[in-house]
Image 1 (cartoon, rainbow, N blue to C red):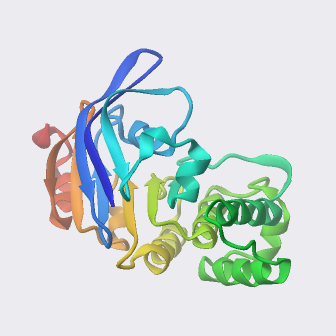
Image 2: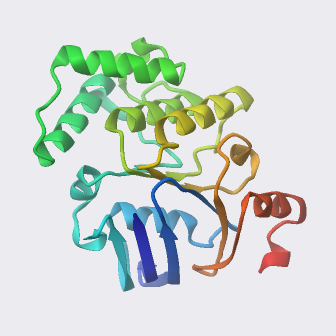
Length: 246
């Protein structure tokens, strides 16, 4: 599904990623862990197409397409979802209207008919219930007045509505209490643990992986993956830290 080959990238002329290579197949969940400044979030932003992140080498293929040649909205329409560590607030924009416009824009880009208002609201209620988020909150402006945990659950609702092929989740566990962590973990499993989907989880800690069991764990340091293993690698990192792996 995703083939990253010798990917290098810089921010403000400062090299961050350095010949990073990674393959993610359909049906797999990969976790990337590593110390601060290793390039984890940069990897997510580069894959999502965030401005200001310059690719200086390498290639990325997503379902046979050159991902780097696509604009951010084209990547989203192709089935890529990027969950942010710090979801932004958008005052004055209804969350439910934002979600409906986002979904229908992607459907139109794929040659599909837009969902009617009634069909969309039914889908939104189902996804909100899955993440135990009060549907009334989706009538507010995007993320305005939401707690940290509510923002993350709302983002998982967005993921469920958009139904991506590949979800890149940047520190979804950041700022979550125990209950919200469990709910988000269960939501990720329900939405994305399917044979035709894949997940790239970017995290500092092992705790989210108690709920979302990864098939592979990778250690990223110095802009490249320096070690890979199974779920037990995350437990090893939790116990001993990153230093022994560097």
